[in-house]
Length: 468
Ligand SMILES: [Ca+2]
Image 1: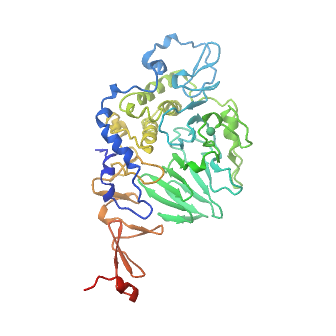
Image 2: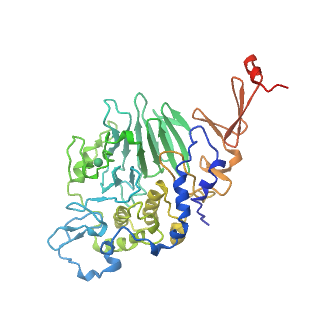
Image 3: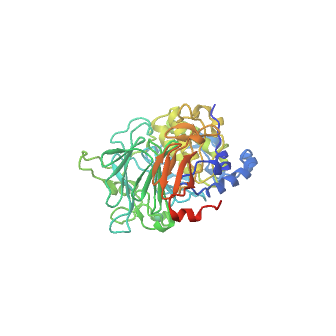
């Protein structure tokens, strides 16, 4: 059984193993708020969804026969319909642009997280969702403010992805000043071609595996989470506002200028924009640019109808509780694009997971949504681990996923008892019972916490010792 204990972990925050780098549990406050709202979470009908009835799927509220089917070739994106005059009706998922190529996420709690999932889905720091079917490597985000960028992140899309976008390989490259390239593929991290064990500190950057994610946190204010497959989530502190560039946009609280090319030209053309951020890798064959009028993944009307019908699930209970925090429209639209390509259970569940992740990441988890979708039963859980996870105390507030039973905690992919937790010192993990001596102090690792005592090892120390 897949038991969801999303909220529970915050109650026991003090009892969780706290390492030097994970002391802050303040993000949990929001979860307590969520907890207080618990009765409301189960009264879906009391919520007013962001989307108006007119914007809800026609498959739910309207009769299809009214739709014009003579103009099928507008190549509308993101669930847009072709109108009689050959233009796109983008109202369904509140899209904008000639082809409905962008959907602003109007949820009030996005928290400035840039997200990309399933190869082709992107939502910028400033909340602009777009679909860009690139088959190359791209600058996801980069520090464009300093002559020597503090960070540059590349995402390597599949050169050829047939079938479900979640089944194709994707990987990341992270670049920091005076450091060799760090690559992340699956759950393996390499630096300069050498595999790193986790957790690991590389100068200002701390890397670890937590639940289903690889987490990268830096002292200069960014966090990145990678789900091991295709999902990458980046959050930065306010001081980086307006300094970023790349597919994640410029992070200046203004969605209207997010499609700015690498030559600093604003465009409405997603292909122009995306192609401009391509990275040509010397060892790779030259990859194909995305055509300006790239086709919609939904080439068949009946497939799109089916996809909309299924993906509209995100507009109703149990997802209503998150609607005012995270606008579901971009996620329904991305789900439709995914199902138009591969209409299978895994793809559908991954699309739902993406929305619940966005909610979890900002502290508003959708509780027990899998109860309503038993086919999505713990889709990515390791067999021994079927629970949710704690707040991180990092810039990415809370992770979703599958977690460990009460009293257990996930460590390197398996569940162990809290008392067995290792302790972290200077970025390295030490097992239970490990003894560290530092000057007069002797510290023993006990349940993830260094238990330190002072010895009378020097004259100075003996002065401070308790008199007999
Ligand atoms: Ca912007």
